[in-house]
Length: 443
Image (tube, rainbow, N blue to C red):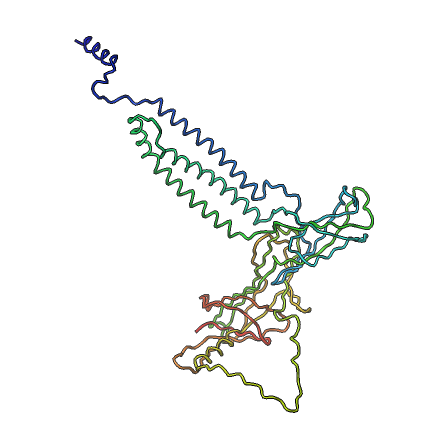
């Protein structure tokens, strides 16, 4: 009987009759081929992603063919509106061109102004400038390059994950039903992990992009200055070159911290800290630079023109301006605003003998970016007072202090934080007036 059953089954297959429907064995060869195809696609995308990351590294300045770099200034005089940088270099003349042996080249930022230069022992015949790309090697440039490279690697991985998701979602042609069932099962196991990886990579890329956008841009474009000398320089020798220029992308601002201590001493004391918020975005770290911070007047450079005086035997009456009507509340607020706009000023090892006060930093050099350092600290013995003003509906009493500033010190205008016994009460602008500082510490 067994032999007969086998023969009958063989006859059925030979005649083409499919017979009763039965589950067909899973063909591993076809699925293995599909997996190898998917793996090949992912390997190709991985190589493309590595190339993308390399392009990102090149864009960050690491792979760019940049030949010109700024020189660190020997001295930098910084004010709130910019700085004057002085550079000392030893340069060898160029050896090609019609002025070979007589031409020196160096780079300055593109928006530098008021260039002054001298070559001791030589006479400068002329100088010219042309645009040039600058090499960035400062702290911000390094940070930006690392972030761009990391973003490139993550972007490559994201492309790989997205392609894997697309390949899994695509329906293969001429696939048997059993293959589709097995593929669906594998898809259910793999897809959640791929989607989670995609979301995590997109989140990391977005955070990196925000960090990159918050980094200030350095000096990417400059001027290549060519200086022609009257006499050629002996072969192989270098000559000393001194040049200076003004530049707006560096400077400093005063930042104060005032903390009132009502219970200290006779009537109270105020702890004062003067800090300098210093910045430079040259694309390089200033190494060995002697940095000096100087104040600068905030008023106009010159007085307004004198009004025209006309003497007339029969003067014509001029229309009088109609004053704006203010209620009592508006007048009170105006008076309070004028009183709140009070100020302060002080110094440490400051040079106050010249027109502007200045502070020279003890440590040479300044990294690219923003830095904050303390340049003065003091305790002002000032009696704290209560100020109450007659008004309707406002019974607040204000805490204030007045301090007479020494004539030998300088406290520039700047932003300030105010606190009482370490508790913050607000912020404002500190402006000294008439040699006296009036500080308000809230109601």
